[in-house]
Image (cartoon, rainbow over all chains, first blue to last red):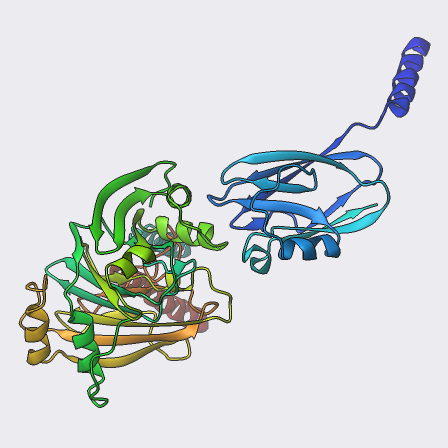
Length: 128
Length: 339
């Protein structure tokens, strides 16, 4: 019994000392809406977002502050693929991206394809 | 025991009503892209179990290519160029006071799409498709259609009722090369065997913002006065602007236009005017050509598979309700009378 308790103690300590495992968040897009309009995630650890587009049209998941979104509202990039916070999800496909929010913050995510923001493709992410 | 019997009877009738077969239907989708289409005018004639759907797309200038998708209530037996003045003649019939020159005119889910028919009419490349909303949307995107944000939901809305769509790709540059001027229309005549005529309206709001205006005229020619759903109340954006026996001169004139020899010797002409906002236009026009009970599913007021009470089911439900009331009255009298 003592050995079992010691083993459990070591497992718990080892788990506490290990680097934080990425958290996974799945976002579905259906009828040009995100499945979640509010996301709460922990700050300081990597978060892997799996974004699944169930629609037969392309969508975007762009996350940042309002200044970033203002730039993209006027932007002309048709496809975003090089930055983890700017993701294009082609029709009927899934894309994955991993982000770490170093400090607590509130950000906005949205789709900047024409008319999609006005249609409701907007959400808020809070890192605590 | 009697109460159990009444409950069982009511339950059975309710199930009968909810099991009424869903009515399959289709519709018209509006344009998007750089070229604007003006007010849509559509003529729907129904005779001998066949819907004749004639509409025209007015060229409003611009360049490049754009397209539109039109949901249909069934597989068309033909898609051809419409008569050159059918729509203008209808406008003149229903707006005789103005007396000016004729106006320019403006369920199954599937992962695959099947091309049923292709044809070309002037600058329009037309394809008739069969498939679910996602499949048709994917096909349209792959063929250069820029579908707006509300397209996935709207395509499913129609595909759940009828998986037949007509895609029309319009080449504005080709139209200009053909000498088409701003305001010119290309009439298209679609012949569809179907149990009842049906006119897609919700599709006219595709890609529009909630407050954007939607304006259209629908001319409906039936053998007798039809029953329509939703009712043309005015406050729902639908007005019955003309509703009377079609004149012999109109029918003769229509019959003499290209492809219109099917026009009967007598008929009833209705003109429905849609003047509303995109947010309000959440319905289609369901028609019962016999004047009885248009389908709520076809009108978009109920989803397929939901209760779409037929007149028979409604009658049976009413009979059950009456029986319940009679039994309740008898029970009350029996209790009230001292033993």
